[in-house]
Image (cartoon, rainbow, N blue to C red; front, side, top):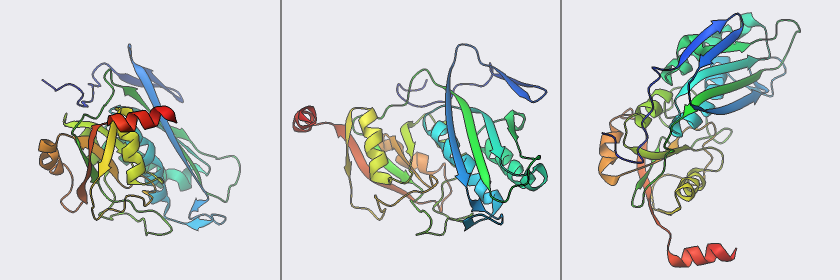
Length: 271
C-alpha cells in the first residue's frame, strides 16, 4: 500500500488514444487534464537562426521542459503535440526525437502528433511543444522534515555548454522512475530562477519553510531547460532513490523542509 502524500502514477489502463485522420481521440473517463507547453525560436541550424544548434537537440530540449513539468507534478503525460515551422522532410529528425522523448516519459509512440510548414519557405527554426496529461486525485505535497535533493546540476547557456550527454542533465526516463517509485512526496524542475527559488516554491505549496545547507550546488544559477530538479522525500529514502538515476548524475541533499515558525508566520501576515 502506498503511503499518503506519495506520488504514484495512476494506471493508463482506462485511457484509450486512437486516430481519426489528423485527429487524436483520447477517452479519459472522469479525469482532470493537465497541460504544459514550451517554445523555441531562432535557435537551430537554419540560415536566419540567431544561435546555432543541432536540430535534434533543440527538439529534445523543447520536449523535456513540459514533460518534466508534468512528470514532477505526478501527472502521467498522455499526448505530445509538436508544431514545427519548417517542411516535413527537414523536420523528420526532430519528429523522431519527439517520439523518443515521449516513449521515455511513458507516452505511446502513436500518441505523438503535430504539424509542419510545407506551403511556405521558412529560414528560421520555430518549435512548439504541448504535453497533455492526467492529474492524480491526490496532488503531490512535501512533508514536514523532508529532505530536499537536487538531482542533476543547474547549467544554462551561454554561461555553460548545454550539450547532449552532459552528466549534469537529468534524463527524462530517470525523472519518470523517481516519480513512479512511490517515495517522492513532491518534485519541481529547476528553470532560470535557480534551485533555491524553485525549492521555496515547493515548500510554499505545502505551507512549509525551506532551509538550505552549504553545498557544492550553486543554488542561484539558472537551470536553463530544466537540467536538474529538486525533490522532497523522507530522509530515509534518499539512498534508495539515488539508485534510480545514473551513477554519474549529480545528487546532493541541499536542505530540509520544516513547519514555518510563528515568527515567520506573523511576518508573512503583515506583508
